[in-house]
Amino acid sequence: MSEAQKIDDLTAMMAALGVRARHAARQLTTASTAEKNAALQNAANELRADAANILAANGEDMKLAAAQEVGQARLDRIMLDEARLEGIAQALEAIITLDDPVGQSIAQWQVDSGLDITRVRVPLGVIGVIYESRPNVTADAAALCLKSGNAVILRGSSEIQNSARLIHGCFARALEAAGLDAHCVQIVDTPDRAAVGMMLGGLDGNIDVIVPRGGKGLVGRVQEEARVPVFAHLDGVCHVYVEAEAELDMARAVLLNAKMRRTGICGAAETLLVDAACAETHLAPLVTALLEADCAVRGDAAAQKIDARVTAATEADWYEEYLDAVIAVKTVAGLDEAVSHITQYGSGHTEAIITENPAAAEAFLNRVDSAIVMHNASTQFADGGEFGMGAEIGIATGRFHARGPVGLEQLTSFKYAVRGSGQTRPK
Image 1 (cartoon, helix red, strand yellow):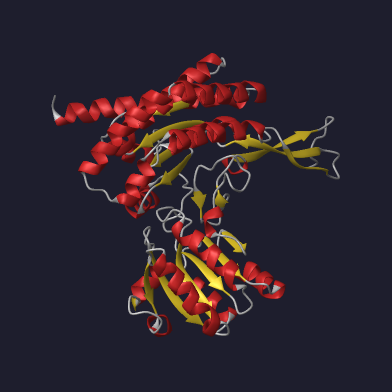
Image 2 (cartoon, rainbow, N blue to C red; image 1 turned 90 degrees about the horizontal axis):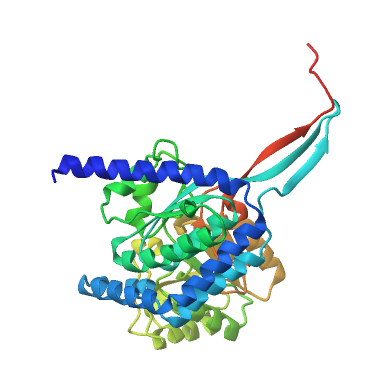
């Protein structure tokens, strides 16, 4: 087959996906909550029933990824085991318990003309999700789009295609069993990267929003090339600021969790800021705890004095999303400098302050302009499931429409339902 023929065939396949998704989205708009919840429960049941096959497929993905030497952090994102697969099924069941946003009245009022106006939540339409490394995104994205009344087109990276294909199959069977169109959830089952470009083009107007989940290369390409709106974050340069009145044991526990629980996720802390007012008592124990946890430390002059294993931080380190067991450490002269540092070097994702001073905490929460700002809590709570959203389709750091975890409400827009009694507008 010639290269031109391959492109023509892929173009036709992608166009058909878009048309089917738009048709399915129209049906899903009027589906009842009971029908959508039944499909979600069916999907959870299918995942459990097909667990052995899914895990075997994931094993093949792991072998291929290991052969490509993708690194341990990436392998951890790809890997499924019984516990993680059960966690995916439980996330679907958690979404069932959440309120259906479709049709909810956001506001209602009457104007002088006597018209009754209601602002009502409606689905966005068709969501395109382009993701790398995480097979669980297949289920999370499908479930959130389904519950919020949106059709979804999924395009996972080639390194998870075996896992993603079987997880998608669970949803296709679940939708059909619930009496819904199986094309509400579709997967781009080809490793051809040209398919990504076609999705970014909108598939002839059939994709309404793109959500990328992956590394800088993928997200940067999506943000640069997409011809439809994008919900995304480029980096997760997250900070933990240990303020002057931080309790040391809490600071140590939160910091270690924020950095080391899972180093490869976007909510992992990448920079530690320690207030100069508590540096004498807090800096050495915190740096030592990181080193003892096998975390490499790149620090300023004060941090380097603590241990010979601390290497000098460069300007580039303050901007770095390591996604690994590495952290940058800096002493700051109070809250103002901490906020200034985060403003200059942060990516607008998640920041945390550790302090027993309520005024300092409130000032930090109000002044730091990131999507998620925390007090006395690990940055690794930056997750839709932990926020009570059941799951998330991604984290958005933009300022329009959605910000932070993108869950059910963020996958809806609204329209105005206007009820009158024969009113006409005067000339």
